[in-house]
Length: 260
Ligand code: CAA
Image (tube, rainbow, N blue to C red; front, side, top):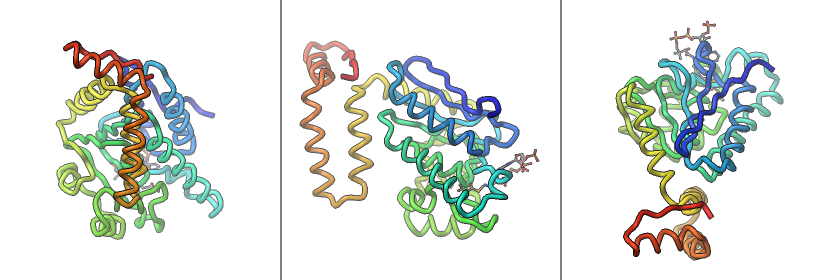
């Protein structure tokens, strides 16, 4: 295996995860996908980490898609297995107890857009470009794009983007609800970090439960989804974080959460 393609830096309870294949516009090879899955599972149990940021090296691309050079000669069986591995990465991000913020600094195309959509929020630089251009290659999105895009932006816009392969800019991504915030390129990591640090100061068990319930409830009828919330709300009253949070409020001091 070649050198690591994913770098992890931890500072102030925030992990910055950078894909470092700048020359290939951070394209998702099998190696990158494998390293990202490992990074998510490692950070999920890291005692010092409470929120994560995912970005791409350089100022041109977040991720320009799955690695076309590697995919070109895949058999149908290999392509299906690659798609399943991409799905495992998306699920790992969504099931992680930590919130993930995608900091999209440039192209987020194909698997790159799909990777960003598996994160909790997408912060984009004004130079970011989004799209699902797989039809140009005679294929369809393979890392969850046909499903996550419609859940984010609605079925009509998802169809349009997937059928045309059009690439949209950050302002349009913000308008349709694909990006959650757009900032100047030089401010992107600072903006993502400011949100991450804020999240990291809150009750970690509560954040993990909120994340889980929002995801699990999204496809359920409202009553069943609300029942998930009621159960989780009750269970949080067995945590030290709940006792600390409410005691700190009443004592007029900042809460110090242990994530227990
Ligand atoms: N896979 C492999 N290599 C890629 C790549 C990709 N997805 N995207 C870019 N690269 C490589 C290029 O081949 C090039 O390598 P060389 O320097 O060795 O020639 C290098 O990155 C720089 O790219 P360009 O010279 O093309 O840069 P550009 O500025 O002219 O164009 C771009 C930028 C518009 C993003 C263009 O690179 C492009 O269209 N890339 C492919 C985008 C794409 O189709 N993504 C979807 C992939 S399929 C997929 O992701 C399936 C899935 O859902 C799982």
